[in-house]
Length: 140
Image (cartoon, rainbow, N blue to C red; front, side, top):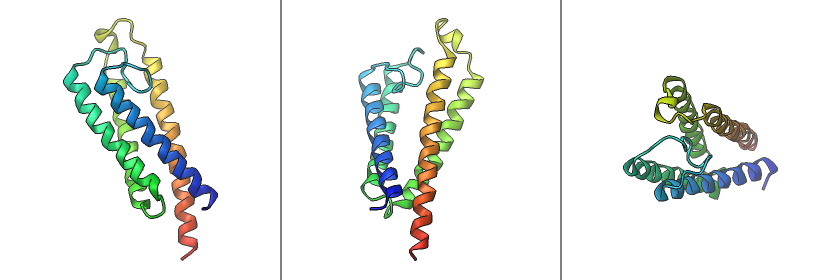
């Protein structure tokens, strides 16, 4: 297996594990920074249940793409599009929400840091998606 494909594959597995842990964290109500983006903002159990089920779905999509990123290259593209929209929406939430009203000890800097780290991971996936896609098209 080519180096870029291996890197993409391992990166997708990392995403599958991350989103699975996020799902478990939300299901159990464990407000762990990084797994719970808005960890210092009050939430309701039903919200955490919804997020848990959605992030479990993301985990399964990442895992499926991990099994064979070349075969599921269109799924990888879909993951990237969904990831970009999630990062944009989280950014709008950060810009439009006064978190201090919800928790006067809330730190927006930490929330932005989490989103920046997600962006870096997303960008990493984008780079290796295009490298793998390019190498696949050159073989045809």
